[in-house]
Structure formats: C-alpha cells, structure tokens
Amino acid sequence: MNRRGFVGLLGLFAGCSARLPLDGSERGSVRTREPVSNANVVDATTPTPSGPVPGPTSEPDPEPESVPDPDPDPEPEPPEPVEEVIVEDEPAPERDLTDREVRGLETLRNADRKITAVVRAFTDGYGTELTDVTATSVGFLRSEYDVRLALAAAQKDYVKAGQRAANAEQETSAAQLVACWQFLRHATGTQVAVVEAYEHLASALADFERDFHEGGVGAADEIRTLLTAADRGLADIRAVSTVDDTAAVSAISAEEYEAKVAQFEADVGAYHDLDGTVREFAEGIKWLRRAKAYDTGADRNVQKARDAAKDARDALRSARRSVDGVRSRAGDDTSLTPILLAFRELASAKTGEATEILD
Image (cartoon, rainbow, N blue to C red; front, side):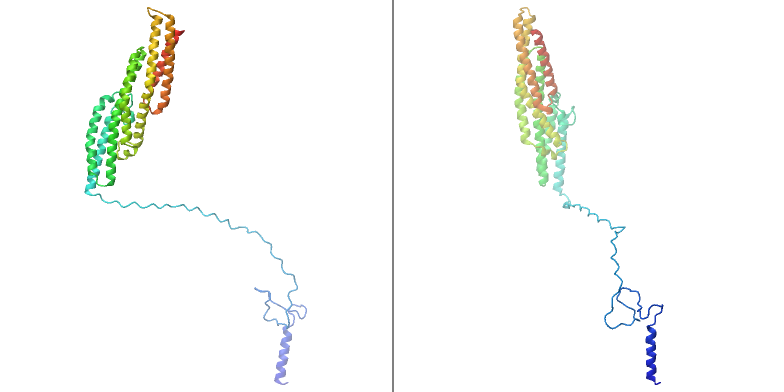
C-alpha cells in the first residue's frame, strides 16, 4: 500500500467515527451544544451541511407574562417649594459723628429731657398720661403755673437744638421738638378752659338741685365765653403739630397724642351741645319753682300750680333727652360723662316733682 492510499483510509475512518452516535440515538442525528447567547450558534465540532440549515421543529417558548414588581419604585415626591428669599440691602456702614454732630445730638437730648419735664408738670397728681388730666381735674388750675415754668425752661433748649443741628436728620428732630412744645403750650391753655367750664357746669347742677335757675343761666353764659378760648386752643393744636412730631420726644407717644386731641374734641364739642341743654334745664327749674310756690305758698292757686308744673315737666323731659343726645355724640372720648349722668338723673328727679304737683 502506497503512502497516499493509507492516509486516505485514515481520513475516511476518522470521518465515519465522527458520525457515530454516542448515546444510542438514531444514526445520523446531529449533536449540538446548549445555546449561550444565540440559538443559531452550533458546536464547532458539528459539520456544517451544505445548503440552508433547517430551523428548530419545536414551537417557540411563549412570552413570559408580565408580573408586577413586588417592590415597585415609590412615586417620586413632588419637589418642596422653594422659599423665596428676599435679600435686603445691607445697611450702610455706620460712620463716626463729627464733633459738630455730637454737640447737636447732645443738645437734642437736653431738649427732650426738658419736654419730659413739661409732661410731668402737666400730669402731676393725676397720673403719667396726658389723658389722665380731664375736665374734672380742677387741681390743674393750681398747677398751671408750674407747667408754664417748665414750658419756659424747655423753650431755651429747643431753640438751641435748632441752632446746633448739624445734619438734615437733626434739623428734622429739632423742628419736631418745636412742634411738641407748641402742642403742650396750647394744650395747657385748652385744658384750663375745659376745667373752668366744668366748674361752671358743676355750679349750674348744684343751683338746679336747689331750684335756683338764675345760677344755671349765668353758668351757661360763662361756659359760652370759655368755649371761645377752648376752640382757639384746639385749632392751634391742629395747626402747629401732628402725631408724627412725637417721634422726636420720649415722653409723648403717638397714641397718647391722638387720645389727648380726641379728648379735647369730645369735651369741647359736649360743652357746645350743653349750652342749649343747660338753658332748657334752667327753664324747667323756673317753672317748677313757680309751681311749688303756687302749690304750697300763702297765695295757693291749684290751677296755676298745675299749669306751671306741666310746663316744668315738659321742659325737664326735653332737657333729659338733650343730655342723652350730648352723651351719644360725645362718645367714649369725653371726660364729662359723670356730670352728664348727674344732669340726667337730676332731670328725672325734678320731672318727678312736677308730676307730683299734677297728680
């Protein structure tokens, strides 16, 4: 046997042995490896047949059912609102005051202390607020002199504060100090008029209690004269000062300023309303006095007594209604409420006396 024939036989034998089944399966079946990533990849040891490779005869695996994720990702939380940050302008760096500004500031402080002394003199014996001094504060008439002394002392300092103001801010403060001083000056004069009018009103009440109508008429005339000064003082207060001026002083707050002005307005307004009421009251007392004289006097006249009593009752009832109107219009700001209630009570009592004569 020549060499080429032997090699050929070996090749033939090797090819046949490669196609023998290893597991007893039918002859000629093709053995492949499990697919790794691609089902079409075959074992390198399997001979590649010529022509197209038939596909697999088994049916394709069904698509896996969609199984919900046992632990689904939570819904994303909405983003937290972003708080708007307002960036304020940084304050200008403080600077050292000049010597002139230091002197001006010290002068303003001295003037403020003097204004405080005026407020203390004004409220002395009554409290700490300007409104603690009311129409019934008759002792204010004795302390008026001390208040005016304090005003004179403060005047020198506020003038000096205006002269030594070293910048625009100090000039504004000095002007406000002047306004507050003017406010206190006119408030002093207005308070005196209001208190004196109260004294005349209280005198009229006492006269009416003892059936003396002439005293009531005289009191009404005095009150009318005093109201001229009160009206002028209140108008001056409004003209020379505002609530904003209190920013320059430590002894008067904005609320205190407004409350004092409101008190003045209510009291002065009540006095104006009371002018006619007091005169009407006096008329009722005049007829009541006559009715009593006709009813119990030596010249007793029943008919005249009844006629006079009727006139007295009508006038006193009208006066009582007028007092109620004054109280309503004055509101809670007036300091005359106690004496207004006293007038109403007296009107009711005197009306009762007139009714007894009629009965």
